[in-house]
Image (cartoon, rainbow, N blue to C red; front, side):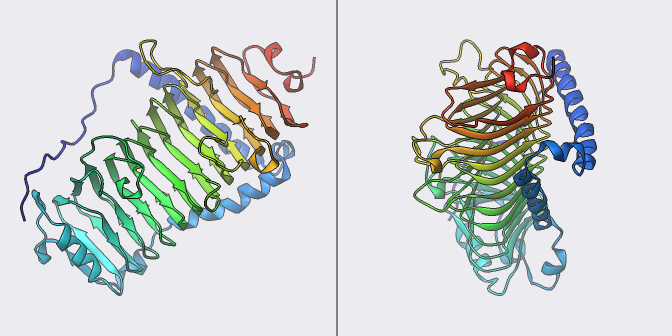
Length: 440
């Protein structure tokens, strides 16, 4: 069956204005400075820096480093498995013909594992594609997969050790949805990898990790989604999320969420990602997550909410968050919605730690380390601790050009909110909470 479809053109970047180039230069300098300090601090973790970190944070960082192995090359695994070439199977990539059935048949034929290679072209599919068998993958060679049904657009990685690599994925979207079939990529199998892809458009999330374990999301560019760019929930654990770019997302750039109706999500390393242009939500959101390290990320440009948030949300009935490390990140231009915007800002800080409604300990936010981050040019506070937040360590952050305060503790509901707070660089030290001030 052939069908005429509108295929969106490749996004083209406009030449930046002089003001934009200057702003980028400033941020680049901050990134460089943070990278240098991060390298020096990494070497010093065994010494002075470690003395300021709680023992649980040191142990967690050490443990989650091992997740980097999930992104190591695996070509030896694939070399002995069959390769099915799309054109040889008569799968047409003309941008008009619906090839859903032939694509799915090719994937199903790889019952013992193997690669479906999509050569140059635009391949149209009208419902979700499923990688059911273990060790199957789709690899692109200048290929684009275009989804034409906003309600059934996913590529679902069900089998263990499945992979999507080097593809461009576009989609027709109408309005935001919440269904798993409306995400562009769904990761469910153990050991799945999504590497080096470009995703433009999704009715819900660009990549939705639903309960998967030992997964790697590396080097992807996700943009123009109507919900989160990268969403991890329902027991997503042991994951490595690195070197991705998200922009123009309808909700959070990267999110790890634990709903109380399902298993908790955590033991995830989020590092070296670039998150920008988040008009309605947060850059990186840890909502009810546990045992997560967020390091060396660059978050720039939220319209109404935090750059990085550690929280629990009563409206979504999530768990509290615990054992979260936020270190060596650059966060800039937070809550900078234009005055003409009809959407009100939330008052969240560049790094916001909050639990508005936390009647029990499992709903509180506990054990958070915020260290060696650069926070700049925000319209609210640098770091805010709000409500049922306990045992937070804040050290060696560089906070500048904030319209609000550098560090704020509001409506405390825990006996020990700040476990340790010292050696932060701010423009007006007298405005810090007394426990955070240096020696007189």
